[in-house]
Image (cartoon, rainbow, N blue to C red; front, side):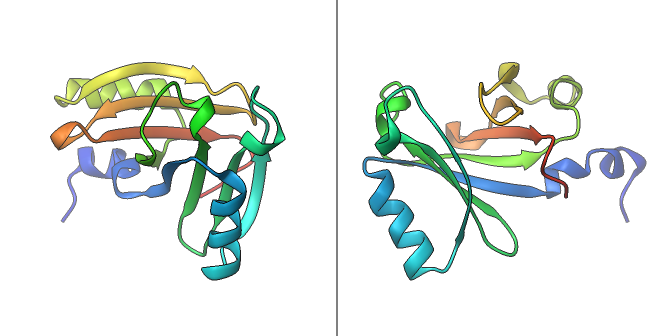
Length: 138
């Protein structure tokens, strides 16, 4: 049985997106869309040109985000973060901090697509991210 606190914090049981840094966006997009039948849902430009766009692909249960290596300030190719939906990123970050989470960034705009993000650290240094975008509903 969930406590009132656990019910209020249901964002933690709603992962919505996993993100990978890729060194070839077009090849990754081709693989995930043609081989695994994921649907390209959104493409957001980066300052590095059309070959280096940010891409959201969707399945029935979760989004996959492709992050172009050139735009990721030296982040290694591979897993980048697991994102959880939040209807109020800063409020949830504050609440998670009060519950003992190590917050690594306050809420900030992603710069494209009306997206707001905020980061915290999971066990082993895994980046966890709170995500909000007005057009998405869960």
